Amino acid sequence: MEFANTLIDWLRPDWFLNLVVISDDYNRARYLAGLWMTVKLSVLSIFFSLIIGILGAAVQGAPSRALRVLVGAFVAFFRNTPPLVQLYFFYFAIGTILRITGENGLPQPLISNFGWAIIALSLFAGALNVEIFRAGIEAVPRSTVEAAEALGYTRLQIYRDIVLPLAIRISLPALGTNLVNLVKTTTLAYAIAVPELLYISAQIWSEDLNVREMMNVLLVSYVGLVAILVWVLHRWEKTLRIPGYGE
Amino acid sequence: MNNYIKTAIAAAVAAVIGSSAFADTLQDIKDAGKIVVGVKQDYKPWGYLTSDGELKGLEIDLARDVAKRLGVEVELVPVVASNRMEFLQQGRINLIIATMGDNPQRREVVGMIEPAYYAGGTNVIAPKAAGLNTWEDLRGKDVCALQGSYYNKRVTQLYGPNLVAFAGIPEVSSALQNGSCVAFLYDNTWIESQIASDDQWADYVMPFETEDPQAWAIAVPLDDLDSAYGKQMSEIVTDWHKSGYLLERNAENGIAPSPFLQEQHDKLQ
Image (cartoon, rainbow over all chains, first blue to last red; front, side):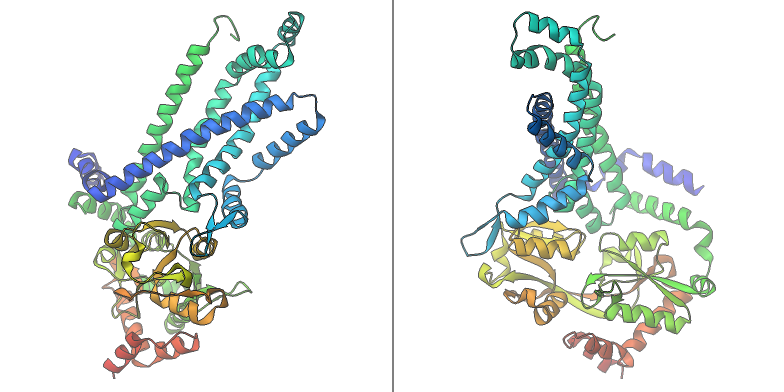
């Protein structure tokens, strides 16, 4: 039967060894560079989106109404528009304004496509993180905060030493989902020619005409990357767990 | 490519096409009353969108002529380099007329119709001020390109530019004009017609010798290459050359005279 033969062909180990991303030096180097680029994009955007989330959530609880409105507007804008559109907006609209004159009198962009990808992805995921942390903060029992106030803690101390540590624990599951999403969203950087995994794979399959093979490689790569992230998050969740709290 | 993969892909394709493998595509098209043609919509003046949103250009004329000769309607589907062969394999389109270069690797995937209907080579468009003189000047520089173009690999391996490849020509044009790259690696036919016809390229030049000439072929699904459908397409292209139809449409679309077209026309007289 045709189908069985196909299946057997696919299951052969030498088929795996003959994947162009393994057997061909040129393609392997490119694939690894793409993988590394995706890792860099993911780690940097996760880092900055967490900072944005923590700062944003802190400001949302601030006494200044103007600041709260500002953060609200930021969250609404970045949460309610498609990330691909944001990326195009940054790269092709803002990027056109932010440029310097190079040595031969030609314009040069101030921020590279990689830079814009980090900025756009961090802001997008950051806006969602603000809401996730806010939910966590609001779930911290009011009585806990009052107890800290009674002990003479300042506003900043309460946020840093009591509310945030508890809020992070409560937020972790939702945060994990968002960060996993962020890793997958890095594929959008393809649109502004950041040579990440999807970009490199598309280059390889248009040259070698091996679309199915590269699609499988891509899927496996992302399953692997996300698995690592999920494992780290689970470890973190486990380390932070306070026996008896939230159970 | 490895034989196992080839067998696997061929088997998968055969399984997908399955029942229609022995069917008569030409008859199917006539029965459906329309032929679906994959065309470019960003390759002025071969296939492009007018300000009214209408598809026009040399290849659009060719697609319409194919339909007219078959006595059916034409449906135009915009394609790009990285998806057109997949579309044809999947049966989403019946025919590719989309500035596609003919090469041995692609011949394993789609049915390239002979004779070729056009020919182009590889060059770059760059600002005059960039001061590029030879292909070697590209080494280490950011060079814009289109995702899926056949010359990306060859030029990267020969001259070592850092390719910045986008999905479509508008994105590349914007990136080039923003200075995100020093040049745009593309087909000399497109570059020549742009520099000649569009004011936005007034300060740009095509600085190199055109390399790696490639014939452009229209394509049918691989299984149809030797069927009545493939043979009919081949006859149509031959007639386009012989009758001078291609020369005439080339001029009518404002494209510089093509030595390749003239040569083919003279050969068939």
